[in-house]
Length: 241
Image (cartoon, rainbow, N blue to C red; front, top):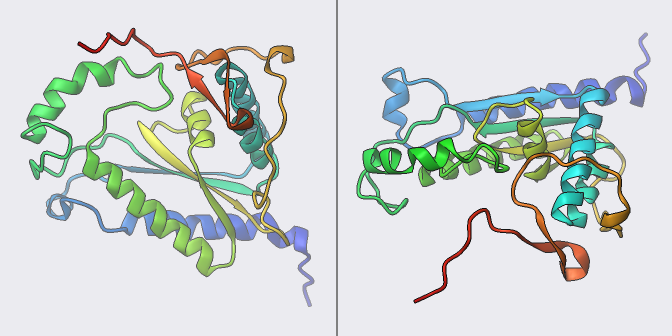
């Protein structure tokens, strides 16, 4: 007879489900399916992190980012990262458009979009995510994340879709995606992110280093009890004529 305690099954079970979730993301329907039939490579990156040291590095980065953006919500999500059992990142890496020439990006053809926006993408590494991205590929990412979240629900693993921890993973080199969503996972009696309160943070008193990421917050501009703060633009915005 083998006794399996809660602590024995907790992380192992979450990681097993995370693998099934990654499979759900990869097999989710997406635009331009004929391209995949012709052998085009998979453009989804799926990474599972469950070791406490890496999760801690993610939460520390989010606190640094929260200070420079002057936003409490980064500190709230950092607390979640310190509590979860694992996280699955699903992102777009080495993506290519479906060649539908749909115009949703504002350009007549996919080729025109890629050519015109190449410099913007090349210069966007200092931002949280890299872009612009094909609109249909962003939709594909959303479908994949929804499919992965469905798999978590089927197996009764608490799951929350987040972007801020995905930003941290990208900036720390844990993932290579241009844009990604993180599915934070836990097996607890109560979901760790359920009704988690926004912390009250005194940004100016924190001794935290900058992340080298744009944008950064405008000092003193606090909205919604500090949940959001106006950010400095990267380039001056011209006056309307």
